[in-house]
Image 1 (cartoon, helix red, strand yellow):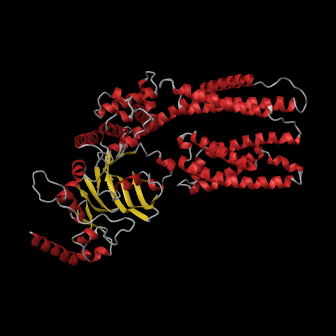
Image 2 (tube, helix red, strand yellow; image 1 turned 120 degrees about the horizontal axis):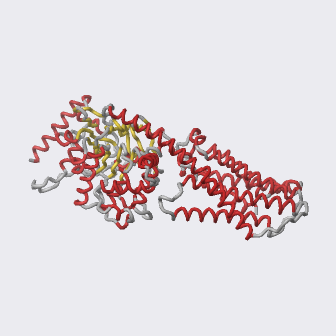
Length: 626
């Protein structure tokens, strides 16, 4: 029995802990992934500890009868909840990048302490049963009353959620006031019924023999539901909705003030690097070995420009982009590097702080829109959710400015329709109510672009957005991106393996090979005079329309295995210019022209003479072939 009680207690503890954190405002939550992992580990540890304590108390109970009260399930659950608090504080910093400051900034621990108080209050009441020798039957109306009360409260909350869900957007109660009102209604109704159970059923009837009335489940359902409804509406009207409105007004004032400050700053701001990546290194730890996916990558993206990241499949383009948003998941790990976005190092940010950047200031368009879009929600719901999640203050400000009584939900829908019109999507009112699988590949990609541009991000990362599309649709998407870039002046990091697309889209280009950047420069400079042998090989391999060729130009060899990358320059096994230092020393960046860098020993003054010999050798062999 002790084992079953411990297992049930650990499961209940996990469910309650995750539920408390899940229903907090997002800015007050512990990041869910880290919280759930930590809670699972701590619950397992507590399971073992509680079994040990239970065995000790039951052993002592054999000799001292008084210790029997410490083996009751409620007392042991109180012990488990208390131990959880201390273990959680100790273990949570080990999961992710959560600091003690993040932990105390969130509301989770404060609410959990109240939960511990409630559990010990209930446990104390149950301990009085054996102390006062109160008779308990099996089944007992007293215990059943608690289970019935909890069941009725949960049913009432479920009905409330369903009713609110099926109301129109304009009449729907906002999430946070709804949660607060449901919690208040459920807690107070359960508390009142539990109090009368303890007073009338347990003490007056069984201790003092004063049976005033009999407990009845029909009365229970009616009383609890009535109390729940009354408390729900009173607390919603008198406290939570006015509080939400006051908070909204305060946020609106803050937003309007910030907007005026930003506009004045932007007017006199020079062209600065909006994103600076320095010495970015990412490894993936697999059973076969360590995959060195990105090795010391550095680049800058300036405000309003389009930077192309080009290279073969597997060279680290997408991993570099995901690292900007700290989206690398195990077995991947960002080993070192800095990601400076508008003066802030995102690597040093906590998960809570990163939520302010993801989806608002920095957005990402992925390769496969069918896997990126949620299949169970309509297009309108998904785009509106972006506005409601990241631009709630702007929606509130616009609603007050319009002063026409419309809700933020209706305004979010109007903004969504306007956004779809801006992207030249026909019949946006119809598309709004479609599901992703009902749209073509090109239309899904347009929808994903719309979601990416919804919050007017400062940086848009496009990870091969035209890969899965045919040539006609590719051209339409590229044309759309160029038009949107000119219209919104959005800074774009465009990732592709196609130099032809890069030449149409980008101002600057960084050529990646095997996890590192081989060459960086303006697009005109790269195509006019590429320095790195790999870059020249990529450009020469592009077929030219109208030029007859017997054979296509190819780069000899294959991309190296990143578990066992070549020493020195990673391109040297495939490079026709390879000479002595290439196989042993990693090349450093050499500035060839203004804003044109190349990582190649051929242009390093240190190896000038050896490089000249290698170049002459290749030219002689080339002349022989001719």
